[in-house]
Image (cartoon, rainbow, N blue to C red; front, top):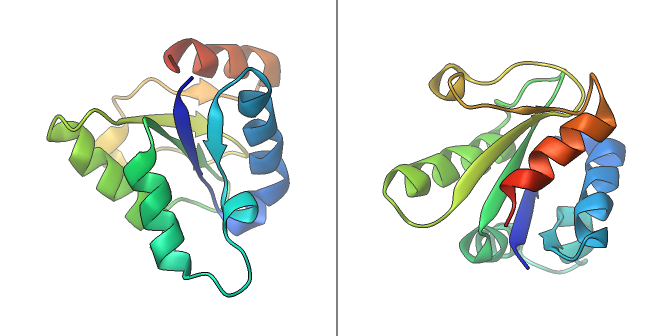
Length: 128
């Protein structure tokens, strides 16, 4: 069972929740902000805990972009840890559109926007 952190824009919450449920339903532990952060919790502390515990960070590419302050911190820190050999892997998926940031354009991605079922299967093959 892998630990999977879902990094997404708030505007894509419906799609991100659907993706998180699909991953959880096959037995992986999924961290999604709406599921893990309660009223009164430190948002930054909870995100740090989720990222530190994750084996995979699914970067949900959005028609709204992925350069907001929150999502940028999540994927950039994950990429840095991956490049430093820390045993975490960034998995980009096209959730609602958009494109990958220039630094990860060489990464293969799963395209859920074009074909949800195929994109999901592509993603799940990478999560072990």
